[in-house]
Structures are given as structure tokens and as C-alpha cells.
Image: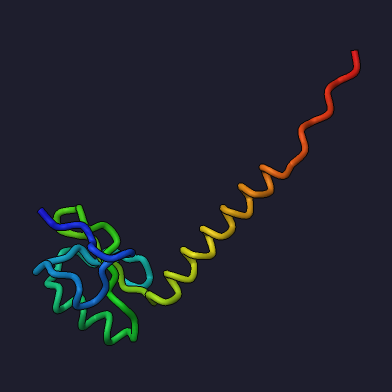
Length: 99
């Protein structure tokens, strides 16, 4: 069984310690199960990173993408969710209907 990532966030590039991965390319197309080194080479050729998306799958699912952009989008979603929660808390209660 694969170990879960030890640092915050998914494992990337050489941090992925398995021999074979199920690869999704940068366009979202399923490539299939290939050797990790081949997946790393494909990511390098595309100028992108190999990111482990689903570490507990067998084999783990990895995707070729821009990791910096991926982290930025994740943080942006978290911030938007926090803003929605704050707005909900600040919303005044509805006025009761007159009898």
C-alpha cells in the first residue's frame, strides 16, 4: 500500500516513490499505466510537473500540470470559501413577519 504524503500537499516529480503510475496528461486525457520515469520525462518535455493526485489508488493517479498554478488555484478556492463563510456570519437575521 502507498504511504500518504508526509508534507502538506501532494507529492511532485521525484518525490513520487512508486514504479508505475496511472497518468493523466496536461490536456486531461488518460494516458494509462506507465513507468514513473517515463511520466517524469513526459512532464519535463511539456515544461510542467508530475503531481500525484490520488496517492491511495493502485497504481497512484498522477497528472501533468503546472504545480505553481495548481497551488495558486487551490489557495484561491480556500480564500473564496472563507469569504463566503464570513459573509454568511455577518448577514443580519431576516426581519420577522408582522402578525
